[in-house]
Length: 290
Image 1 (spheres, rainbow, N blue to C red):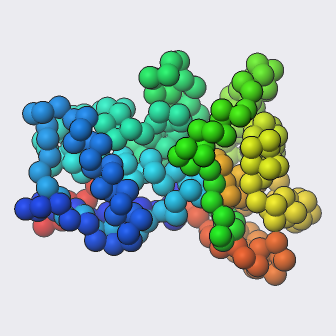
Image 2: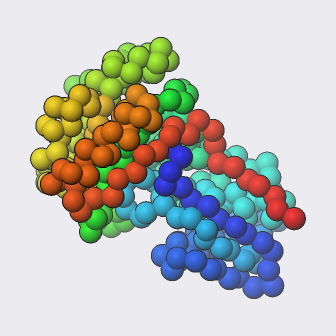
């Protein structure tokens, strides 16, 4: 989980439902609230709420915007309904999140780097296997191509349907990388080993999804950028979810700033937004404003 871009909502009781802010965010707030009211127990139905979208995550960019917004809406409505004891898994169920991947759900609750255990059944939410704090000095550089979006909704479902089951040998390689390389390297704050394992993990996953997304990365410009990142000494890079966002891990803020300045001059990044993000090692914050 990272500090930016981030989602910030403001909510207050109201006589009728109202939403202000970015139209796309407001529509998703409306949809999440409707699902919540449909699935919440009768004794915990929330009142009408006046919503204001202060900051929003870009949709379909591989940053988990749908899960973060759904969990934020569910948290607010559960508090207004007097159901503060509802678990995070229950809140996710009420807004229909965490059905395919629960990483965003666990990240909303705890922050940090998270390893989930995979689904035990179609109805289950994947359990959290490990949660590790990321060193505060490390920085993530996000490279977001403009004008393209990752798969979502029906297109995402169709993409999964086109893929064969992941071979057991591939799953074994990913599990070993996650538990025997990534996690130990992070616990020891070994930047080099963690970066190498992170890149290896992303390459394996990208090769599996290549038939659907057109290559290891969803955007061809970023495929061209990959060898230049290597030449710059950046080894911990890869695509987040369906992309098209690419992430690059740097050991500190100064290195991240230097990388951004270099990328701004790179032809592959002329139509990309570049963002430096800090690790987020805590869950979502709820502030009560008088």
